[in-house]
Amino acid sequence: MSPLPPRHIAVIMDGNGRWARQRDLPRSAGHQAGMASVRECVAGCLEAGVGVLTLFAFSQENWQRPADEIDALMTLLEEYVAQDGDELRRQGVAVRVMGDLEPLTPAARAAVDQIQHDTAAGTALLLNICLSYGSRAELVRAARLLAEEAVAGRLRPGDIDEAMLTARLYTAGLPDPDLVIRTSGEHRLSNFLLWQLAYAEFLVTPVLWPDFTRENLRAAIEEYMHRERRFGRVRAGT
Ligand code: IPE
Ligand code: IPE
Ligand code: MG
Image (cartoon, rainbow, N blue to C red; front, side, top):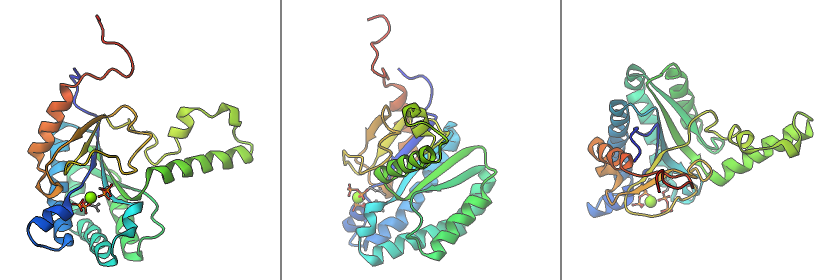
């Protein structure tokens, strides 16, 4: 049993396309509908006292989707910043965006900068948005940073340990996710937080992302609190 609520929840927000297809709508309508679930999750984390929420919004591999779908997703990001920025600040939510932001349009980059700047003082919840994110690329980036520091003579390769690599990930300084939720029934990580999820509890729900509510989040937290986390050890008393 894990009597404490999760400190950090990560979510693979999946199923928007299937939600739209079920309604004969374009995929972009599914992404639009999924924004309500983002708001539900933020509210649910604030209610439950979860300190960090990390959402997988757009993977590096998602750049291979049709251009009109990518455009729709980037426009949604800009709308989210414009519509929710004030409310997030009022709620005490600090937003951080993680990923390779190089390929983003200038408007999307500006939206990212604005939301990070405007919410920087938030202390109630840290909302990480993984955008243009790939875990393998994040690990390669960390390896490169370590190599550069070694070449510059600031560290010795033999001294590199897990903590030093962890400190060069986008998630540096944060606790690892305790719970990772994937919606829409797929049982895979899709290149999400491979290092950080080493001991996370995995919960797959058949609910499609646009149908995911704070009640679903509450139920996921409840299930997490009934899991027994062993971290490779044996259970006390056995
Ligand atoms: C998740 O929904 C959103 C993104 C990956 C951007 P999908 O668009 O993957 O929806 P499905 O998996 O096709 O239903
Ligand atoms: C993972 O979903 C990425 C996000 C939720 C942003 P995908 O729908 O892209 O993953 P696959 O293709 O099913 O593995
Ligand atoms: Mg999908």
